[in-house]
Length: 125
Image: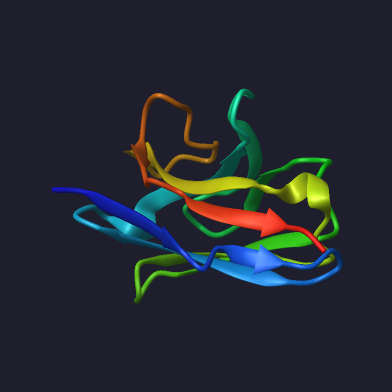
């Protein structure tokens, strides 16, 4: 049984920072491409940043370039999203996903892959 869970969301002021975590169980985390996505109610899911199974960046959205970084810890089966200089426009539910295939160099592609339920990030003064 695969389980993906995000944590670390919350309320932060504009210009602030936040780190999200994603833990995965039930699959070979170290051989999976991983990605972070976000969604605002009434809008489609936005792909924001992805890494290959080796940890190399495969995609970074222009909307977060220079502000967000991602890292992973294979031993802990964890993915992290460091968000700096947050803006009101970053307010969304953030989800992480593991690719359905192993050893992929792309991003997880919905509806395929393994997805968490998401964690809410609200940027407001």
